Length: 200
Image (cartoon, rainbow, N blue to C red; front, side, top):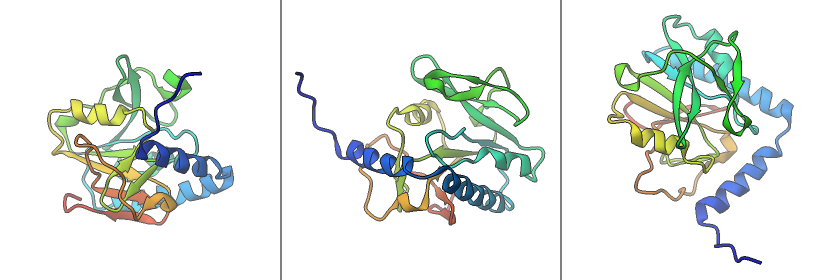
């Protein structure tokens, strides 16, 4: 039987938090997600983002996409991730009445549509997060898609990063961070939006 290498601290933490998240029942997830959507819409009232890059929730992540139908800025488009070969991703414009396709890993994603060019406007990027600490260090799913995507962009100055996370997983203890990790500027939970950076 092969000997597996020991898990690093981030992997151990990720597994523990994900197990707790999966134990949440559907009613709890739905009710808390509606609170997050309302906090997001309130927070956006005095923001001038030209585009919002969201995500479609899986495995008891906070559900955020219904907020786009109530966004009062009708000139602002919402975009959602589509997985590309080579473990990369892009963001495609999508509206709630348009069909989705089943992408890699069985996760729903937009089909054909306008691609978001991140350098052309101020963008709010909502990051699905397993956990986040009070310094903005985020724990993702472990696949590294968002890390690789952010590293592929030549300039992050027009992008505001917001970790979306259940409040119980906003950790007081710091999450181990790698040199290439980019801290978020704000945290969005069912208890509100909390800004960590003067950028927002």
